[in-house]
Amino acid sequence: MVAPSRPKITGVRQFLDLEQQRDWIEGKIDLPDTGDRLESLEQRFKYVARFEKLRNRPQAAEVLEILGLYGPSCIPIPRKTERHYWSVSCLPSTSDKPLIRVNASWMELFTLYAQDEDIRARFIVHLSDFTTDRSATPSRVDEPFLEQSVAMPEDVSYFFPRGADIFGINVRSSISIRKFLMDSRVLRGIRTFNLTHMNRGKNAYQASHCYSVADFMQAD
Image (cartoon, rainbow, N blue to C red; front, side, top):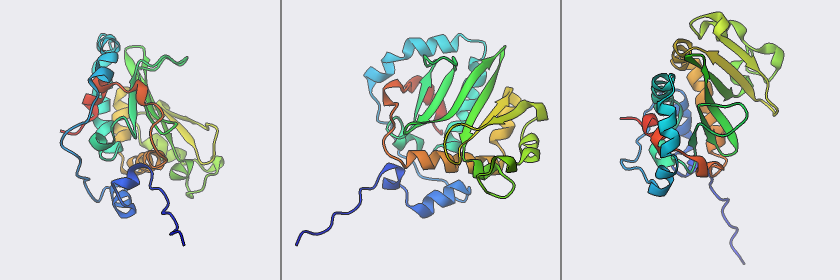
């Protein structure tokens, strides 16, 4: 008899069991990360010029500061999972002209755009984490909560991307983006969605990963 093969473990399940993932989502534990980053010098040099172009933008300081909040707070074990399970693109060549975009698997997680001299952000999350009854029902969006999670109510808006239980949140201004990222419920929602897609397998956007930008997303 041939022994049945074990199901292949994909994504960050290789490094974190479900209990660790749940505890991290809830903010109950800090996850030990690897000390050294495994990086490709060829890949780093590939996007140096694009990174310098970003540094010359008037929004550069705000972008890198926001990434310094997002990386350690929203991506589990970012050093160990860098590039292979998440990536960040610098000035990606897409029609919406973002400054940076963070991806996992085939999914966009987080994007920053220029807005005059300031910035705006787009978060992709699970709709059920931002409704009043935890359902994936568009009419149940918790609008009062969203408005309270930013500096000014008019700084937040939302949309419904294609797909089941998918929700898009737009946040305008660096002040509101910072406040949004410091809300515990928001963080739980972002972490849940990010883990969902990091657990789906290898990142499809490895070739566009910019190490120079990722430097600002690593915890000290």
